[in-house]
Image 1 (cartoon, one colour):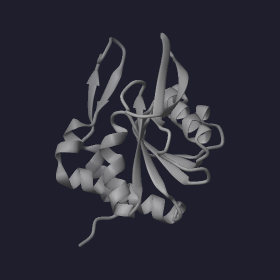
Image 2 (cartoon, rainbow, N blue to C red):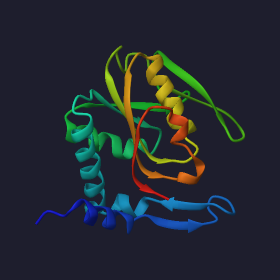
Image 3 (cartoon, rainbow, N blue to C red):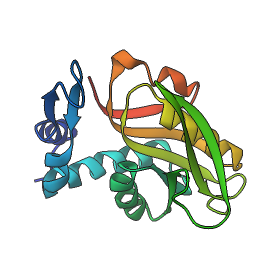
Image 4 (cartoon, rainbow, N blue to C red):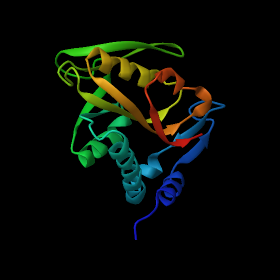
Length: 181
């Protein structure tokens, strides 16, 4: 018997472990390590992303994963969909010619990059990461894909921290999250 969407969500939620005061006091950290080591939870997560993408974006060309946790879910989803996977990395981690975008962090600047030939003008992409908080890294990846000429269809995240309003930073680009806290 196949599990329902609700049963899958409940199972996955049980594998996301909260840690108070990590990495600093006042922060409630959502640990996905138990989810990653549980085959059933990991499969259910990819099942739900796959179902959503097939219903909403049947014409996607690439899944684009953000460094580093987007690399956990992105290749699995891309494989299921029969499309390629593109890496968006922190500056200095990719060989060859790259395109980059800088963005502001709470206490400074950061930069993400992609190989210059990773996507072609007009290709349709979906961004994926484990979590959206303030939305800075997802916004930077979105801008990077636009700079490369790709059409960003939407963003996929496992967890959305609603109080930090990261989805608002994505403008008109839709963000799909499995869980909102």
